[in-house]
Image 1 (tube, rainbow, N blue to C red):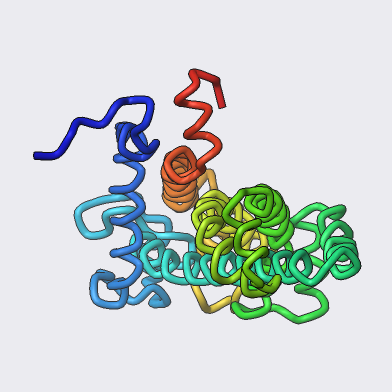
Image 2 (cartoon, helix red, strand yellow):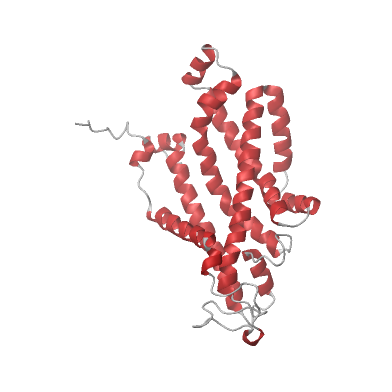
Length: 292
């Protein structure tokens, strides 16, 4: 028979209820991801096909979300655009995760000189606004899906670097790290074997929080015409194209805008819940009755 666990000694994730907002956000994010994965098989029309006889047609039985100013089905472009937008944004977050997290941890593990060099470059990148740094990188690398993903990765890497530094210094002050050092463990060994497993949750949570910002930034870049190729439908490019015909076809701009807002809010809800669930310091504050 298992003994009951006292509320004060129970792990934070065992006592943290799954809020309704985060559950709805998780369902919506999952649905959008599934639709993006199966997009080529579920689009009702070719997203590039132009029906010039149905220009600016409002939503109806044939075209559920209407037709844009070039006679293209908005629903088909919205579904295919989710595939491109999410692929670029997830690629940017992944690059930011490895660039920021790995460089920061490596610089911290190798000593004070390497830490100053690494974080000197990170502070320099952080001093510029995200969108401005991304614009400069795209001008240097050229437009396209891969340059945009690289620009997003470099622009958002400082956020992962700062989280990694805070978590690394917190763990290095723990007794188990001191014991590992006393038993002859080197810096890299202690980092990979003991510290990294304990801070990975915080970095993953940071990725969930940064992903909505990457999606919005990618949409802004596409809105400015600096995103992927003009033939590839993205939500930002759909908003940019439809903004010139907002009076004749408001449905063409409302559909991608509402979808973008829905996805970003859902990701923020899921990211906030993940942070409350995985961050040990927040869990300790919750046990003590302290507001985060």
